Amino acid sequence: MNAYQKYFEVNKQTWNKKVAVHTKSEMYNLKAFKKGESSFKKYELEVLQNKTVAKESI
Image 1 (tube, rainbow, N blue to C red):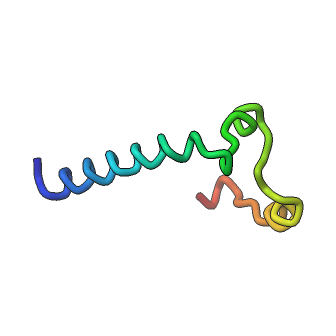
Image 2: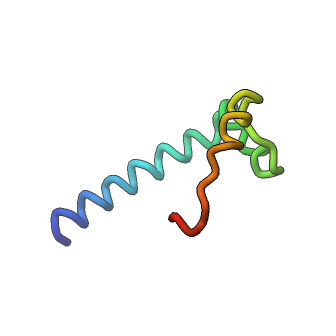
């Protein structure tokens, strides 16, 4: 395993540990998200609705 691969694996393990903590957080409300609910506030949705990116530009 080269240094890059080792760094990538350690980084991946770190993020996987963080995800486990965050999924239990009420802040993220994962159950509601899985049901299709959004955590965005009204003003955030208003700003985002005009900021879509065309598929062709990706």
